[in-house]
Amino acid sequence: MDAVRTCVACRARESRGALLRVVMHDGQLCVDDRAALPGRGSWVHPTAECLKLAVTRGAFPRALRVSGKPDASPLENRLKTLMDN
Image 1: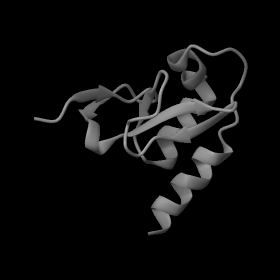
Image 2: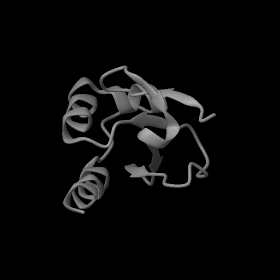
Image 3: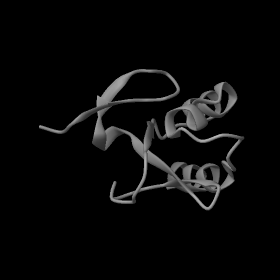
C-alpha cells in the first residue's frame, strides 16, 4: 500500500503517487521525482490550482521550514511541461 501524504495547498490526503514532492535546492523549489533528495519535503497536487494556492498562502516556506519567499519558477516550469504532455 502506498503511503498517504497531504497536499500543502488544498490539504487533501492522497497516495504519494498522486502528489509531487517538492524540496528546496539552492533557494529554489524543485520537484523530487524519486523522493530521494535530502532535506524536508512538501507534497502538492500536480495542478496549476494547487501550485498557485500553495504559493499564495506561503505554504512551501512553512512546510519546508525556511524563511523568505523561495523561487517557485522551476516548479512552475516543471508543472507546465507535465500538463503539456
